[in-house]
Length: 139
Image 1 (cartoon, helix red, strand yellow):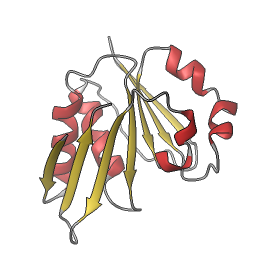
Image 2: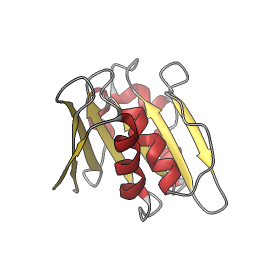
Image 3: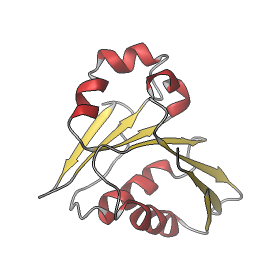
């Protein structure tokens, strides 16, 4: 388990970038944290760390955003509006997993039954207005 303290959105992005720089394809990142904790900022950093030149935004209304580069792919899910893992399977979860992309899943608590037990768990806790504790737990 690794713990980091972030004092700003930029810090959170930098932690995400360092974390994702060497992630192998097919890795699932299960993300946990309250609304506004910094999950999307962390994913923005992940995209940068993976060498992806793209605008990362929260997929709350689209549910899935895909970011691709020359040799890497990041699929960003927001499960806030889903109520079960069944709904995730309905949108093609297994197809996304089989593509070999890194999959970052916000609001993972809503779809935990969809995970296979090998995901990396990232929890972001608010410590104050800008301060966050980021905990990364490998399976």
